[in-house]
Length: 456
Image 1 (cartoon, helix red, strand yellow):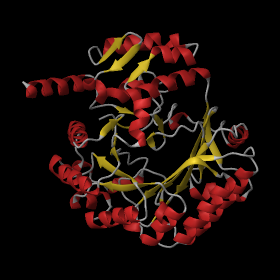
Image 2 (cartoon, rainbow, N blue to C red):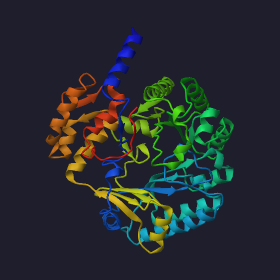
Image 3 (cartoon, rainbow, N blue to C red):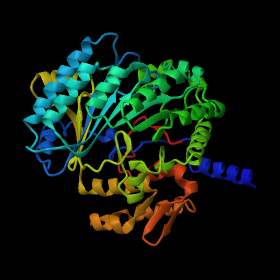
């Protein structure tokens, strides 16, 4: 009976297009594919100048350098075998901070800080301290300040961890992807469990109590058995949070992905089964499922944010960050303001050139309209709660009734998987694999031609 029900569910998901669809991840709305050059540095300066000093901001710093380039990665990164370009880039970051100082209103405080990459741990201990001190000098930490850093266990040591801890790091995000040797070889990322375990032990010894583990499903040569083995290794590390991302194979966008053998990639239905296996394993271990691809221990702040309705999406995925504005620093970083988004020049050379010319690096972005904010609110509710609260939507958006035709079409097209109870439209547990597809129905930019990741 259970097997028949499972097969019927797979058939339904297939009929509704889950295994063929390519859709945005909706870490922003509109997606970055809708950004334009009109919302550039002028818009950036305008938004920065309008920040309220009484409300803390979040800060993201992008470190685009890696000693090795993982083939699966589609992030804006570049390889280097020396620290010379890293040192030069650090100088540009410090110059950008000085430019921000002259633009930001006096009294701005920082609620959250995140260093991503690339590989932030390519920085030496002295560089770590220098960058951290410079950021705090321009945007001092607010009470309850938190600081997270993406860490490559193969490119970190006790001295770097101590420097990060002394700079106030409260959470470490550890890249794992998969521990199977043949999977690692196929994606250009060799990383032993022993090296990862040593890194975790050093983090714990340094007083870092919150650890996040990043895993990826849909990788070449990945099977249910290999992923099960990886999950067992992750259990031994006992992370507080787990991010389970689907691999996005976009070799025309990320040239290094051409090194990955396409015939070794699991198909869309196999990807779905890999994701379901991992989700069931983590929830059976007591983790709370957070949105479509995160898991957290019940006492973790991410779980609490979901319980209280404060869970949000941003460019790092799901977050408990309540700061209304995010300031992006470094090449390709994206800032998020009440008025819209601004992305710094993506290429490191172009970014450095703008900063050297004495101007901020805003390159493109998007100025939000009231209609955009309505659609963004509906999509964020779906992505974070699997539900749209019609009363809440109407309370904040006078034109909320404009979405009624979309609501009706979704309820009809996903009958039984999306249901309305009172003033709430729910995605049922059986329909949750379709969440990104359902969210796309509320996307006014879905006709943009772009390479998105698989919905499965």
